[in-house]
Length: 310
Image 1 (cartoon, helix red, strand yellow):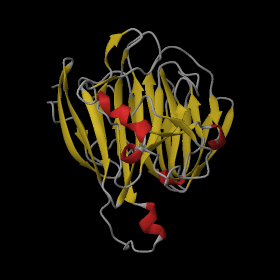
Image 2 (cartoon, one colour; image 1 turned 90 degrees about the vertical axis):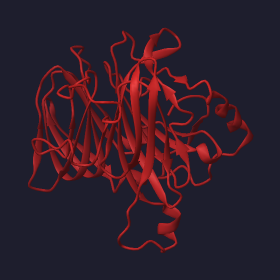
Image 3 (tube, one colour; image 1 turned 90 degrees about the horizontal axis):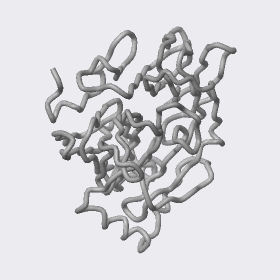
């Protein structure tokens, strides 16, 4: 049965399978073009990535990992957590099997494809980093899996950090129609994490036990009915098969992270979006404001882009 409009959100663990904390793939009715696997590993554990007509990007969320694959073993140095700046990543082309080992939390973005692209490693220093938007719409974007950074067949992958009190995926936008030169048809996965905002951690006022959260919204377009109004915490997953999505909102005391995985049926691998017409004017406010001085997180060099995107 195809999910009803408000059933595209999955709390942490609801998609657990075969040793993975979350698995998104074509076994979900109405889902075809993207996939995601999230695992928590210790020194004695491993997970397999079987060969098949699927391309993948291995993304350390927290910790370090190694991936055995055709041609050798790639070490991913990783990071202490998603708010520590960009990580190194590994792209595995269609038909490539792998065994993933390490200690920590790791995500694997997937897209089915018969087009074979070469395996590629991107160091953290090679990941393009943007500070996008301005004012309370400022967010940090790591573009390791976008067409400008990676030669993939179908996958478009990035991650976004929204500091406490800010909004991202804003203005609300969609990409559910193939309109050449204007909009691409793309499924999208949001995987979330949240943590106490950095300035409060640095000030030493955060207790040991917190309930870090943000929120995320989707709503219907001509392509289909969807209605997500969710409080999101670490490990939660939201699927966007169609419709407008955004904003993703960080509560003032908590930073919000999400990993975006996109792919679709269009012939070109391109990320083109259409803003909600009632919200498109918000982009015109960005040149009138300064970017949030809290960003960028981590030691990556800073780029800026106030024109497009999540």
